[in-house]
Image (cartoon, rainbow, N blue to C red; front, side, top):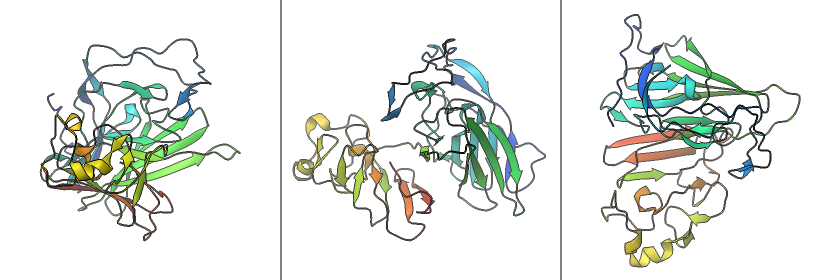
Length: 327
């Protein structure tokens, strides 16, 4: 699939950090119109939670042919990074690129082809999806409002804001770049607009290009991981038993069985066949959620390394805000 072109910054953008709005054209499998009748689905189970969607429209069909579609896009860049946000698809980050080498540190989808994974139907992989108040949030494929903010230090923020009609909550996330800094800052503001206590989940669902030389790290005091429903628990990084039905304990002694050998991204053989930090040895899709780190305030982090591209990604936050992370 051919990479779509990113527009150059307008001539009136002269600072170290540039932020502007300009559409991009991307081949797209468009969602078909939602059912005209309200869908309640109050007994539907969705990823272990309630699958009710009313009063949101529910979409259960996607076009089978792609068309070139012009999407509203918000762009921000500095000397090192280039980021593109799609406000019409939940304010997700669609492109995150290292300008020094052209490497897409977030997985870049050059076609938009929704799967029916979202709470209200359409959802796409790649980039960074922002989730609240629950899994693959209700507005993951719905438009958000955007605002560009310029700060005294020369940094700029693209604010994305939406209102959840199910719980009457308001959520905002801001994508910020600073002059001369090779990192992306994410700002979050959540508002309870009701007189009642509301529970919520929050996470940024970041996608990366995984291959046989891609590795993921947690803080060194994290010794166990679980899937996000805690149906399976394992030691980390070396699994000494069963995890998601795979006998990694036997793998550590006898190697990877022939029928579980990957057909693509074959490991080079220089890491243990039961090392869960190397994602290519995993024969099926699953998650690893770390237990709470007891380290310093900034110890809740995840490091991912592409040894092929010689590029690292680091996600860090405070324990008081985000006590865990997942791959």
